[in-house]
Amino acid sequence: MNTNEVAKILGVSSSTVKRWVKHLSIEPARNSKGHFIFTKEEFSQLEHYHNQDQIQSVQMLSHPNNEEVEKLKLKVNELELKLYKKADGVASIQLLQHRNELEDLLSIVNELTTRMDHLETQLSGTKKPPAISKPIALDTIKSRRKRKRKITQIMFGL
Image (tube, rainbow, N blue to C red; front, side, top):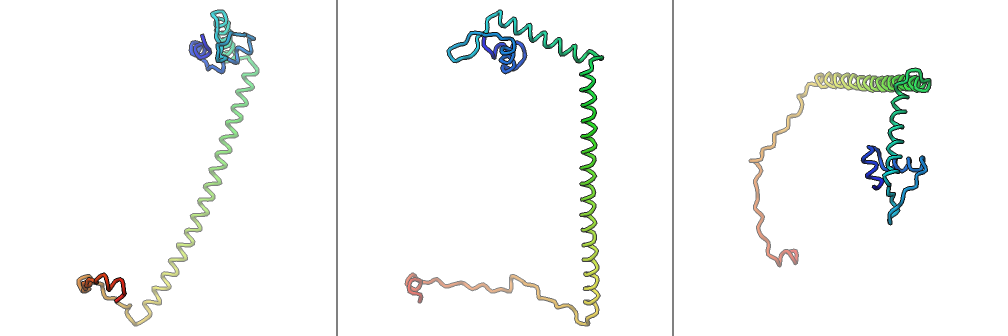
């Protein structure tokens, strides 16, 4: 049985199996390419280690008096609180920046409105009506047919 088969049966990755081999000091045989070939005894050792590891993980998580677990929970809660505070700070800064940009845009709009009002009053103060341009009609433009030029005229510029 090779490393991938053992990993698939145990439900872990092949690198985990390799790590367990080093940890347990198991020396399985190798094939011509250098890959591990596990015997039934070696597989049973790995399976036993895997089962023990799962039991320890469950015990560690289910044991309420474990100080390490409680410390980890407190640390996670502290980190989450810091993360939320940081996110709130970033959002507040972004809102202030957007507000400043909106105020700048509002002042520009007000300035343009004032200038436009001033120009309208100047325009209404003049007695001359604004110049009216004639509309361009396409049917009034006469199309001229270009006469064909002979090749000698083209070549000699005649």
